[in-house]
Image (tube, rainbow, N blue to C red; front, side, top):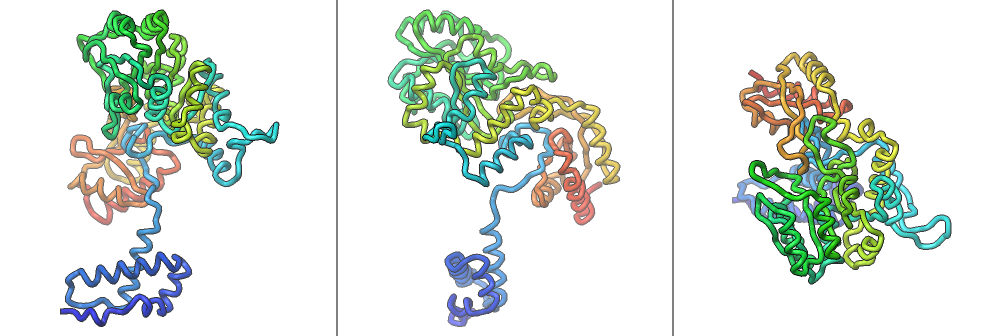
Length: 453
C-alpha cells in the first residue's frame, strides 16, 4: 500500500527548477491546475509505488503538451473523395489563403466605408461579385447553407404555408432534416406529391389552398431512380408567380460550372435557377464552389433587404476570414480561371494519365505495391453515385486496418482506404507538395512494422 502522505505538494513541486521552466512556458494557472490533476490521478491509480518527483513532472509535461496542441491538424487525403466532409470539404486556392492571412493579420474595412469614412456593411464585400456572376439583383453571405435556409424561411414565411415535395424532405449530415429546419423557422410545411412522383398539378392545388411559398430542395446527397417524375423548375416558378407566391431554391452544392463537361452527371447550376426565375436561391460556399464554409443567398433585392434586416442575420453572419477567402474564390470564376486555380475543380478535371504517372512514381520510389484502376468520387453531398476514373497505388499488407491506423497516427496524418483487402492511395486528392511526406510515412510504416506481404 503506497503512502500518499509522501506525495509532494503542488507548492513543493513548483520550487523545482524544472517546474520553474514550465511556469515560463505555460503560465501559473495552467501549470498549477495540471499538477493538481496529475496528483489526483496518482492518488486514484491504484499502483503500489509512488512516482518520483521527476516522474511526476515528466507526466505533467506530457499532459501539458497534449493539452496545448491544436486539435485541428493537417491531414493528407488519399481517399479519392474530393469533398470529404469529415476532412473539411473544400481546400482553398492559394489566392484565397493569402487573402485570409491578410485579413487575419490586420485590421480590415469589414464594416467601414473607406470612401466616406463612415460605417459600412459586411454584405458589400461579396455582393457585387455574386450578382455579377449570377445575374441576380442582390446577395448576402451567412455562415452555412443550413442557416441560409433557416433565415429565408424565418424572414419570408413565418406562420405562413410553404409547399415542398415529399421527395425533397431530405436529411443532411449529422441528422439535420429539412422538415426540422422548416418547423424551427415557424413556416407551416405543406407536403405535396409522393416520394417518387410529384406533378405540377400538386403544386397548383397547394397554391390554390393558400400556400404563399414553394421550396425546392435539391437532393444532392442521394438519388431516386426508376419510376419517378417531377416538374421542371421553370414550370413551378410560373405556377407560383401566377398565384403570387415566392419560390425558394436550395441548391445545396451550388455549382457555377457544368459538371457534365468533366464526365459527371448534370448538377443543377446557379445560372439555371436564375434563368428559371427563382426568387431566392441559396447554396454552400465550401462544396462545388470550392471556397470557405459559407451559406450564399442570391435573388430579388426587395427580399434580400428583408433578410439582411432580420435579427437572425446577425447571429449567423460570416466573419472577415470567410468573406476574404470567399471573395478571392469568386474572383477566380469572374476571371474564368476556376478550373486552373480552385483545388476542387483541379481535382475534378485532372487527367487520368497524370494520375497514373504519379501513382507509378510512388510505386517506383517505394519499391512496393502496384498500380491499379479505380474510382474517385466528388463527395460532400454532391453528385451521389457518380465516379471519376482514376489510378490507385495499392499495397497488399497483413492487416489493412492496422496500416490505416498507423498512417492516421503519422505526422501529418494520412487517410487512405481499403479496396479488395488492399490499402489504396488515390493521387487525385493528394497535393503534389505532400507527396514526400506521404511516401516517407508509407515507407516508415512498411519498414518498422513489417506489415507488407
